[in-house]
Amino acid sequence: PCILGLATGSSPKGLYAELVRLHKEEGLSFKNVISFNLDEYYPMEPNSINSYVRFMKELLFDHVDILPENYHVPDGLLTKEQIADYCHDYEAKIEALGGIDLQILGIGGNGHIGFNESGSLQNSKTRLVALDHITRVAASKDFFGLSNTPRTAITLGVKKIMEAKQVILMAWGEGKSNIVKKSVEDEVTNRVPASFLQEHNNAVFVLDKEASSKLTRINKPWLVEQVEWTDKLVRKAVLGLALQLKKPILMLTDADYIENGMSDLLADSGPAYDINIKIFNKLQNTITGWPGGKPNAEDANRPERAEPARKRVLIFSPHPDDDIISMGGTFMRLQEQGHEVHVAYQTSGNIAVADDEALRFARFVIDYNEKFGIKSAEADDIYQKAATFLTNKKNSEIDIPEVRYIKGLIRKGEARATSHFVGLNDDQIHFMELPFYETGTIEKKPIGQEDIQLTMDLIEKIKPHQIYAAGDLADPHGTHKVCLDAIFEAVKALKPKSFMDECWLWLYRGAWQEWG
Image (cartoon, rainbow, N blue to C red):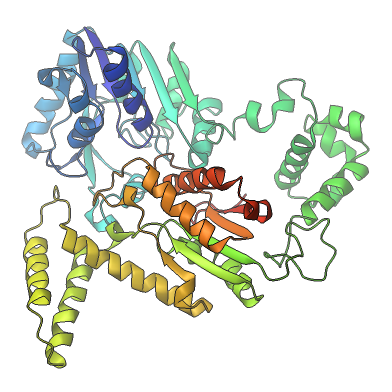
């Protein structure tokens, strides 16, 4: 048998989708696979929408031919007294099979592997652990708030991970770049449990460009190899040097360049004075108080065109608040400077609304009707149905459509209030409700043709000179990324249209990761 150690979280989703494809299209069989998952929240019902049993079944086990008795996920329903014996038996099963052949890992923001949090020792065993605050905050969006997020979990120990014959750790997105650097290049320490993998004889980190961006050979390749000094690389190097030394660009000296491994740049393009002025000017030319372009101004070195002076602008907001949170100042300035600004809310954002809030709004409708003598049996029925469902709702249940609609209306009202505050009229506010989002669960459908068509229709209707889109790529499976993919596909399909010659696409940064 092949013994696999499996991980959950967003990192392995693409891997599991590819394994399912290989099984269905190329005959990859899991008949001889025995798998052990790293961890599970505790306490946790196996059919809860946040359980790792459910995650693994929905993403992998239910779609391949693995035998049900051959996959193991830690049990979140044990009593406290049973846990120690259970964990001992879990390890004993792995040992009896000769150990794990291949262990798949993600990495937490604090360097945890499995739920072996900061401080875990290299010889730690499978056990119940308290979850770090950082870990709980990261998970809280799935649990509708920190107060609902479990405080403990059962995890495979570091010792068993280190005993695996091969380890593959995956990390995607810029949010993981700092911890990847600490794990790969800094000292081996129990403060960063993933750093133990430096001592494993067959461990591989599989990263995308963003997750690897702080590693020396990516961030400062000139320190480890001969490089070709392109304009982009020079800008990156000089900005990095100024930030590292906490000096203004124009104050960098020849000695600063030489002492930081950039002597060949100096020889190629120096002295420092000339390089500094060139980069300073490039940087200055990216800064503007006129996001829609400055009218009646020379615009050769400005980020945006001066003409047309009044632009049609389309801001795409994945959820009903990303526009004002992530580019609020720019949004307001575009409106104040006289452009025709439209905002498109791509999804309802309904899963972010608390149950008691939905109930409060439904009750408001009943009270409103009573106060004004409006008889509506339908409204009463909807309220009763929503109240009954929410009162008896289990963790594992998806909201019924009525509750989802009420939650969506709450978000819609918030978004409309924001846009009115900025100065938009109702005909400049567009609610797209892209179908990929409307599953009622954290797990969304992949982008579909309908999502792309709705996006194309809106762009074609407005014919914008500027499109703003959330360029938040931290989670490759997150709502922001799917919304961005829909825009990219729509723009690609519309490119032959003549109005697209005048259309520029700008990305704005997600709220949790400001521009460097």
